[in-house]
Image (tube, helix red, strand yellow):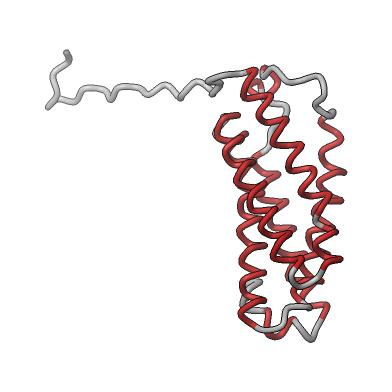
Length: 188
């Protein structure tokens, strides 16, 4: 069952709303974390600004932010007036979480600060839309998302600084070997 299709049953059952939001946020955290490798030669070689937090700060910050996203999502889904509004809110949250997890793939898996920057700008826009949509139904839930928006804006500035300091930085592409000639092919 998806977060969207659970809305009708979830309105009257808080455990279902909060459980669905927590499951979606947990999946996002796991998907994003799998792509991150701060110990890679590529990442450690990047020039970073002096104001970048130490790597060990990111885990606790994101844990707290993911908890507030799950809380806000579960709370707001219980305050929508009808199924259509609930589906739109759930879709907004789903898009946001997809962009959230996608940033790690763009930055780390593709080894591209520029792609990461594009992803984080989209995440900022999505987060603003999510807060706006959430505020229509529940101001408390929208306020709970404000630290997430602030951290995403900070992450965008950090990503932009890294991209600026490392123009065109990408890992060297894998070397492709030419196929060995067969009896039908003549060596050149």
